[in-house]
Amino acid sequence: MKMIRLLALLPFIGILGGITFVNQVTPYVLGMPFILFWIVMWVVLTSGIMAIVFKLDPSNQGGDS
Amino acid sequence: MNVALLIIFAFLLLSLYLGIRARKGKDMNLEQWTIGGRGFGTLFVFLLMAGEIYTTFTFLGGSGWAYDKGAPTFYIISYGCLAYIISYWLLPTVWKYAKENHLMSQSDFFVSKYKSPVLGILVSLVGVIALIPYLVLQLKGLGIIVSEASYGSISPTLAIWIGVIAVTFYVMVSGIHGSAWTSVVKDIMILVVVVFLGIYLPFHYYGGIQPMFEAIDKAKPGFLVLPETGMSVSWFVSTVLLTTLGFYMWPHTFGSIYSAKNEKVFRKNAMIMPLYQLVLLFVFFVGFAAILQVPNLEGSQADLALLRLSIQTFDPWFVGIIGAAGLLTAMVPGSMILMTASTLLAKNVYKAVSPSATDAQISALAKYLVPVIALVSLYFTFQGGNTIVTLLLMGYSLVTQLFPAFVFSLAKNNFVTRQGAFAGIIAGVATVAYITISGTTIGTLFPSLPQAIQDLNVGIVALIANIVVMTVVSLVTTRTVNVNCE
Image (cartoon, rainbow over all chains, first blue to last red):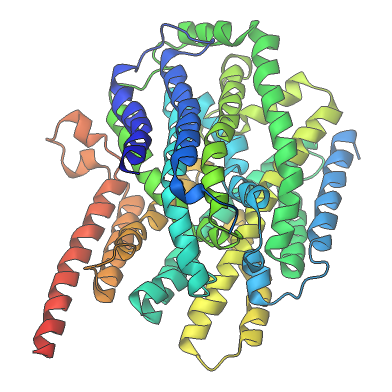
């Protein structure tokens, strides 16, 4: 469970820590200025990370109770 | 009567019908009315939370900020994303505690954790004071949307009155069930409309997303990155952090946590919500597309960017659809706010001062408070004033002040005493009020500090004041208790 929480920290580091380094327009990725792409990428990654967390989390085993 | 107006009215009637029909077969006691009898599954909880988050602010404010401020608007996507991560662990904890202790409102949580009805009154008042600007914001948005989309044939004032009467009516009848059902229509509408606009407009006017951004970058260099000073990187980081903490502190969001039927609902939502957040991306695209097409919208006029560009581009029937989507984005959160504010006042303020009131009386009082709060909000709406986002930020800073006392109460051994919680919240709220009214920034407080610190969101100051006072008062009061024991 501890490892899972570390995984969930990544988006915080990516968005809050990363923003300093990506505050630029170029290169454009998927048509978006780089700073916007960076944030969008982290949003998508967050969804993926939370899916992994959900899968690994023992409290989700078993049915809806 | 034009086509656009007919379409807007058709959707108004549809949502009114769904809102009232939602009551069917339910005995409307307070638990059923305000938190749906703790019976909502993943989809309804998703829609309710999305309904509260994707408001007129999404529609007008999001595009308005992209139009007016550029890159700083990206903070909106960021904080939601981070808040959903926290929600995975936070919401199940809150839900479980609420279920075990039969809680119905956010204030109940504080009352129960700190064993203090007085703290409940304070939390309720802070909540209601923050909710009213939020509701005013929705109403202003509603007025703008309907009046613009009807090509001016309905005045904002009339539109607001019609919207408020409809919402008040279905909230009194169906409570949260009404909000959940209307949010079904709302979310489908906004998803379709926003994604379509966000893709169509850049391609129609610029031939693509990248050409659009290139054109903007050429016309306004530096607009697509965070500026060196003001809304700089440090502003961005501090604002995202603050809003992430405040995210679930809104009384209506907190209350909708209770409506889930089990805790797994939240864990599932934590996977989907971040992606859904990307709807905002398309809202931004619309705002950016407007920059070179409808220039010269200044100040609060920026909120009109989306509508002005749509009117210029589309036929009236489609403008009507956009208007209807906008109307619903005001009505769903509006209904949640009205319901939450009346529940807080009835259950946590009235009941606290007159404990002999029966549950039936409280339930009735909560319903009758709905029109009263609606009227108060109408008063503030017609008084005029700030642009949409500024209003929201003030409310946000206020509810964020509940966070320290809340988060410490989750710990097994909470060192914060009820006096500490009370004093901390008061200190934080007072600081927010002072800062907002006097227009203080960290730069004006400490002009000699480095620019990066000057640009920090001034809400940090209020939060620090809150935590310091909370800690000191808690330590002092714990000691007195210990001394008394000896």
